[in-house]
Length: 393
Image 1 (cartoon, rainbow, N blue to C red):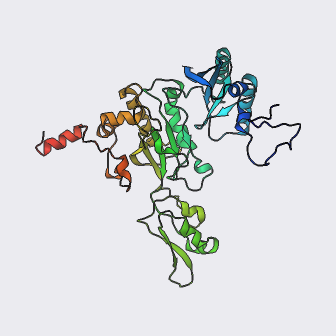
Image 2 (image 1 turned 180 degrees about the horizontal axis):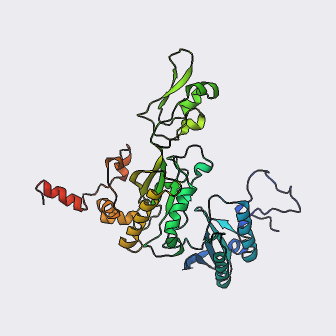
Image 3 (image 1 turned 90 degrees about the horizontal axis):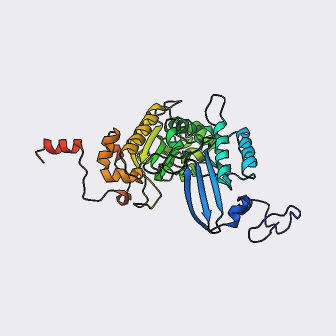
């Protein structure tokens, strides 16, 4: 076994060249042999069909990747089944993408198609796919999302619930490549955004609308007030002494609070979750790619929708409408944000049936960089009506 630059572990001499006993193995050990052989020497790739990619190396070697949808939260039984499939078809190698897809890498097209057939045949008791193959090319890949109610303490919405409900409606776009360009959908449960939804074509963002409630009695018993004060990124919390002259607590400046929940992270006596105030905001138009236009931040298009469990119908219907209009109206290779800027954001709101309100205006002090500063104006029916009413054109 090689012990060269790739740092392979020698089980016969476990202490040899050991630097530390903490941390993961070298990433090269997780790559199939054919990827190690051609590392950094790949010429091209193409998508043979939804869910199957082929990469070609300078040496002429070809590898085939079969991609199927996974989940952020998996049972041990489910992971063991994935490992069994990897042992059978991919020599034990399997990888997860950043969007929770599962990929198996094989060395022949025949084996790739055989694997795809095997994955499609495995279903849950109710009949749904365990491993739906797709998520490549001009379609919708898996929705990357955060923890949600199952684990996190600051979410304004769930993660797995809305993601499941939305993907049920968009599933055909996952299994095919019929959109004008690839479409990335993300979800973050609160504006701390550990799901990085600020640069997605469509982003769902859990949003708190009320400041934290303060339990003064509990706070002085279990919380360190200096840490609570220091936790606020906007300096919206200050220490106070209550009217009794004895109880030490804090006060929140509601005008400054942005409902991030950092204070609750430091102190359980400042809960932020609220059934009536919490909901989902929808953003659109972001991307990381440099193609056609520079990378873009997502823009808020729906300020708030309610958390109507278990299927979030308002959120699902809004996202579905946006995707359907985009699929019908955009040009080939045009990302959602590029399409919206070409027709004008005024026209975008009109086509997708959304109402524009002052809540959508970006008043962040550095927002000038993201404003549309062009002198061009895309006229809509509403704009023409206003012009006519004031005696204009």
